[in-house]
Length: 438
Ligand code: HEC
Ligand code: HEC
Ligand code: HEC
Ligand code: HEC
Image 1: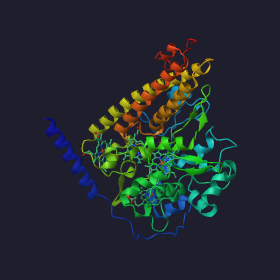
Image 2: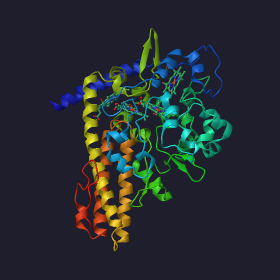
Image 3: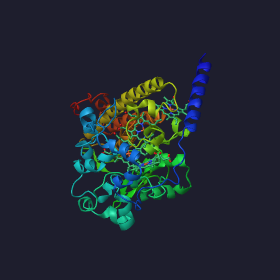
Image 4: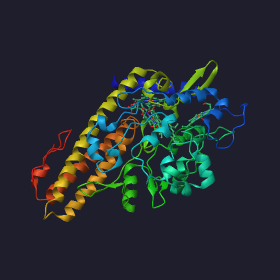
């Protein structure tokens, strides 16, 4: 019975894929442009004259405001929704201001509004926010761009994300525009100009939806991919450099902050990635304007239009949307349990630090365990699909994070000769409870 069920589901999936492949619009080579678009033209409205459908749908990203259970476009505060994160990011900008991401056309407004930006912020922060970038990188070189202070560089930037971030004018093919992506692929022996069209429908998002850091004094934009793109590879890379984003208050732990590693997480052997599905398949589904078929550029949560986003491959859309709910609820619960475990570890380490004859080696081990646990948790938390992009990988990483966090708590208790620090739930979910003095 179960086997028959599986066969039916597989057959339905295959038919879906076949129908989908049959319906791919022909490649748009040799179109008749109404106007000539300059190379790396930052102003999307000019491209829009030639491509009114893509431009009209792209503009919708400015005003989208609908939320889903875990995501959506309103830009709600993660800190208000989940106050544990105020503790997890204590001493760092994300503990003060951390809003959910919105549509592409808001990128420039939002980066300028965040309280995480100040007079010391490097220009690098504009790297994923503006269609001015490709032309500026071409003119200044990326090293100089990154070194220019944010406020100064801002004078040269007046466009949000736009056509020039993903397309080559003239041919309209998808391209890598961010030099940091090109360098990261290069370091792994990969040359994007040889990628297939279907691969580019994912790689073009990796211009921005990735983990990155600012290397050295010059704040050079770098993706930590030299050892691979799994979370273990990324942590090993940062450990080898002794890199940290901030020091955790009261424990002095050198911490790591994950950015938005959708690309790394999705491509870590997820079911959809292995089946050859691209980011654009779900986030930029084909829509019709009379006889014309085009890719919706209204990039947003696919749960807001599941018939379009999933229905081109899955015949039973209600079923797969039900699966998304089950998966996300499960991962959300596990994510909160991970946060509780990490906060218990933090509370225990903070108490241990104050003990006069604390064992320094054990304490240092506890700090490292906290660093590694929290980066794993953050990789899943900062990735914006609440685990859906790769459910098995999310649960694997969160399980490791809980284990490491509880080990950190144990090492801290041992280092302080204080079994009371082993109490689970020293943190009650809202406010840290006072820990009994060891
Ligand atoms: C199989 C379909 C599918 C594929 C492929 C896919 N996504 Fe998603 N994505 C989703 C779903 C479903 C969500 C959850 C949306 C929600 O919770 O509202 C999501 C959420 C997101 C979000 C957050 C959306 C929001 O409303 O804030 C981002 C950003 C994102 N995906 C980027 C990507 C990128 C980049 C890729 C490729 C590396 C990708 N996705 C591949 C289905 C997909
Ligand atoms: C975030 C990246 C991104 C941005 C920004 C973007 N596009 Fe696209 N565009 C894509 C992807 C992905 C495809 C699908 C390409 C494919 O299947 O080969 C696409 C396809 C197209 C196509 C081919 C026909 C179609 O609809 O599939 C045109 C024309 C186009 N885009 C125009 C534009 C214009 C005009 C803008 C600016 C208003 C723009 N794009 C902005 C990613 C982007
Ligand atoms: C040039 C950088 C850049 C590229 C390329 C890019 N994104 Fe984004 N994306 C962003 C930024 C920045 C935001 C958040 C903007 C904000 O919050 O104001 C975002 C937001 C999103 C959202 C959330 C929208 C919402 O309404 O909540 C989704 C979904 C998304 N991107 C998917 C994609 C996909 C899929 C691709 C590839 C086809 C892609 N992005 C390519 C930078 C980029
Ligand atoms: C381009 C085609 C395509 C699109 C678009 C697509 N899927 Fe899939 N999906 C697949 C394929 C192929 C599989 C592999 C399973 C199979 O063999 O049937 C799959 C599997 C799944 C599974 C089962 C995975 C598992 O491991 O249990 C779920 C759930 C799912 N998809 C949900 C979605 C949702 C939700 C959307 C829309 C946001 C979506 N899919 C969009 C092709 C697609």
